[in-house]
Amino acid sequence: MARDEPPRLLRVDCTTRTVTSERIPEAWLEAYVGGKGLGARYLYEELDAGTDPLAPENVLLFALGPVSGEIPGEARYAAITKSPLTGAFLDSYGGGSFPARLAGSLGTHLGVLVTGRADDPIALSIDGGEATIEPADDLWGRDAEATAEAFPDAAVACIGPAGERGVQYATIASDGGDHHAGRGGAGAVMGSKRLKAVVVRGDPPDGREHAALRKRYERRFAESETGRWQGASETAETIDFANEVGVLPTRGWQEGQFDGADEIGIEAVREHAREREREDDAVPGGFRVDSEEGESVPRGATPIVLGAGLGIDDFDAVAALGAVCDRLALDVITAGNAVAWAVRASEEGLIDRDLAFGDYEAARDLIREIATRETPLGDALADGIDATAAEFGGSGLIPTVKGMDLSSYDPRGAETMALAYATSDRGACHRRARPVESEAVGRGWPTDRARVAAVVGEQNRRAVRWSLIADDFVGEALDDLGAEWLAAVGREYDREALATVGERIWTLVRLFNVREGFDRSDDGLPDALLEPRDEPGDGNAIDPAEFRSLLDRYYRYRGWDRNGRPTRETVRRLGLTSVVDDETPVPGAPSSDRDASAEVTDDD
Image 1 (cartoon, helix red, strand yellow):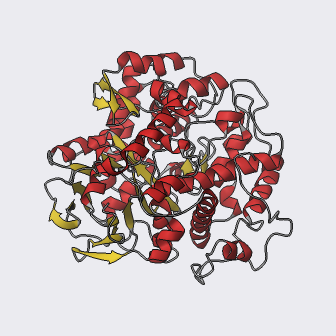
Image 2 (cartoon, one colour):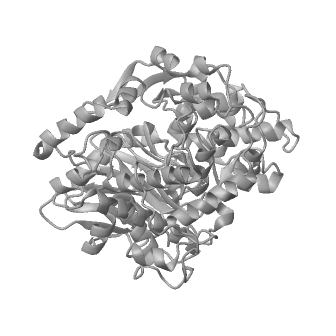
Image 3 (cartoon, one colour):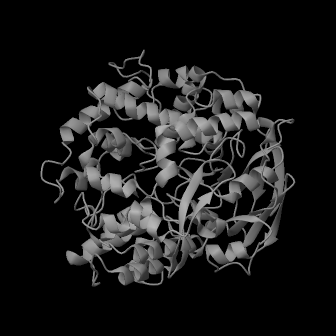
């Protein structure tokens, strides 16, 4: 993005097929930085309570941050909208060449806000700070790879058949399906607008202006524990870690370890990979492998959910399932969990379909049915696990929070992770906070207050990183939360101010969700987690009373009332009083036992 002019926003109306450019309010930039924060402010402003996520009135924002394309690591963009899967706020992030070239195409603009619905399929072409709307009838029906191939001179973010058919966990795919803005169904929103693709032709920022700063952070990251781990394994080693500590969701969340984990873990990935994705800098990407369904880049979720979760211990089969999801532009995690639900429902006689764990071909066929909605079971599962269970029964088979199924870690082996899942703003998400990585190996916290502080602190810090927008892993090297990088582009903050920005963003998203009717009941745990796993051992169930006490403490720490609503005092303290509308219930007094002086720090 050009730095010599105030940031602007491109607004695209698919209904009228018009594009306009508008100034982003300076106060919004200061309070929310960019990316997730700015997206939260726009979403709260643009939408009325109860807006149907697939209606023309919903908005879809392709957002960048103030240092996009310059900070080390993989460039990323945020897709921000109201989720069709959960009905809550959704921010999902995609990488690859698209966000870097988007940054080089937008000129002075920091994002693209899309609203309305076209009568026929369209594509949005962006270059030189301008956007044009073009017909895309010939692209409709193509998968992510074929859509990208139609634009050999550009980078493309697009939907596949899943997004076209409104599958509520359809993704927005970039680089032909190598990267995805995944969980929550942003691809379905894009499909509802008949927007097939966003095509960007600008060159990525060259990074020369901040080359020395970039090199210094590359070295800092490479020397960190996270940098050494990513350099060796990226996220592909997640399954090995989860299996070792007993939190690997196996065979539809019935067990915590998988006896075939070695066959699909990091060593298997290294054996099968033909190359390693790399950026121009020192931060390596994922492993590229070939499968019978085409190329894929299997990251941590692929072997966890499509391997252990489905009882499949053949690496080639797991990679092929990942490639199917990638080309159809379907979220790997929910697709895998949906198939696991169907297998368990079949075993319990809830559906008339012969399915079994370990059956690769049956899983592949069902995934395709989901993406195309071509069978009754596929059509039902396309609306999510909760919706399918409401129709057939089996609501306790696969755990969900706010309508989104859990992902990589079973919190019955790490109860602080249960709190992170329950309080995640977009539904059960392991990326908002990952205390499991400390707790499961015995490096937990001595008190409940410290456990809560760990979750709150990580949620706030990630809200800041996703507003920059920084690579998830390289972002962990930002000890000052990005203040030095922001100063380099003329935005002055210190670490304390950015910590407040993170809390402000998290609270505004909560206010959005409260306005949509979310409350304490949506922060509860599913029944599936209140029962012990079959393996490893008994006693792993989460105690409901202990969890309720932990959730109470979380609310007090954040300055929310017992029903999970930010109090008027908290709203005032974070500068949100003028933002909140009359449709959002805000309690008039703070919780009586809130520790108002509580400050979230790394030491907590």
